[in-house]
Length: 228
Image (tube, rainbow, N blue to C red; front, side):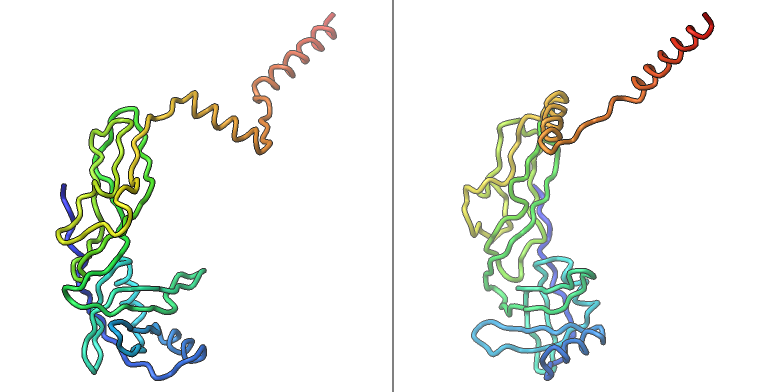
């Protein structure tokens, strides 16, 4: 099964931050910068500002590997917590975890389905991500899962996934990821829809054609009576 290359290291130039508080944070954001904190390995937190556009592009992958360059040196980090504006979506603050090459970290990786399941089947994604332990410098963008030709009744568990070399499942290996079931018939879908509509009290008006036929019939009767 094909597997994608690990997340590439992205370099971002940063500045040490000396101002704190809400007012300072607003000034930083107005300058298209993002306040952030680097921490980990027992060292004191490092407060920095990062270019907002560069950080936004880098964090399109939730497990991006960043090299933060400061005057004092560079730090290899992965995003731990990112706060975004609930309406506009821009990054307001970022907590970045310092990692070292060769070190293993626990991350959630999205699954990507490839192929087509067998005829008359429905593919149910029970879990769209899997928690794995991987080297900090070899975190995959995604894990591809082949469903080619799978029949109803077949399942894919966490332990069935093909992981990158050096990675292991961090959670329950028997966790159900993908479930292949029989596709419902048209009659079953319509019955379920009708039942759901009945539960919420949805009523359908009589078809216009029927109402029109009734009016036409009444008109014909009146016309006949007048002609008589």
